[in-house]
Length: 419
Ligand code: F0G
Image (cartoon, rainbow, N blue to C red; front, top):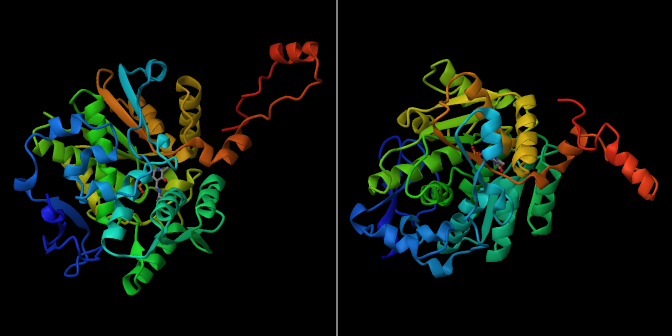
């Protein structure tokens, strides 16, 4: 197949564009763009083709916009575990809970699924410079993939609001890191303007090619659940690209006859940064942005989500909904995942599980349903929050007696100081 088996289409007015054009939103109406495939060019035996390849983003090349897989800028992304969480299911009162651990990706977050495709696209388009605004993970991921591709990389981050591990990643991979005295929404506005005027390729989730990579999480879940979709798919929401991408993935599987039913999409936002969830709850026809978003889950500290229209469609088309969780609920879920399932995730990632716990309490999730929670990033990216929250380990003399005494005395090392 040649690369022109796909094209870009405005989700608002339907205007079509060539995939060779450097374009992020519709020139006619400003709408978001979606990557569409010529149905007649999609092989009918996708399952057979895919089964022969390892579980990974590139297993699904036929439904990705890059035709020459050999040229992919890849660090081995995707193929993350879908953990059957028996202890946590029991604790929450659910029969089948799975957690897809996106922290297993090369730079420790789901962003790598998008960047492998987005950065490969940057090369195809002949771009030499790439850029993004970020709450941390996007910058870490872009920096790594740009390094691999030999591209110059610029990242804009909100000063003092990016977890230490993520900042470290962007620096070591050689990106030009620019901290702005403002929040993520302001950073994104600036970088979009710069990329619209200069030969710098924008790799935020407004870039539709990046989202194509991220939709492979849906393909993998279907493969890991032996050809089925879950009843409910719960995902943390910030800029709202990932929930839109995953929904697109499930819809494409459905259109290909590869799943019999679609999951309900449930987006979870942090209480202090919940423009979409709150607007949906109040049945507003448009999303009211939050001016000063605030949450301990810095990755989703976003007040003006660029993909809100795609996300609202995903939720409505799937008969799903959005919910909010407090910072305390997020940190409790982070602890539960770590101490019941051995999964250490960053706070934003735990929002999906925090949402699940809340929804079960509210009676919105049935005990018999199959639920998949996406956890989006690795806990080691943001260790500060853990050290602030948990008691420091005890220190004793280097004698057997002192250690034995410490082992039997209370309080134990891993105790929560305060929620
Ligand atoms: N979880 C984590 C760990 C994230 O880093 C992000 C987004 C999200 C969830 C939300 O995903 O934006 O697609 O709704 N992080 C971006 C960044 C904004 O810059 O790293 P979304």
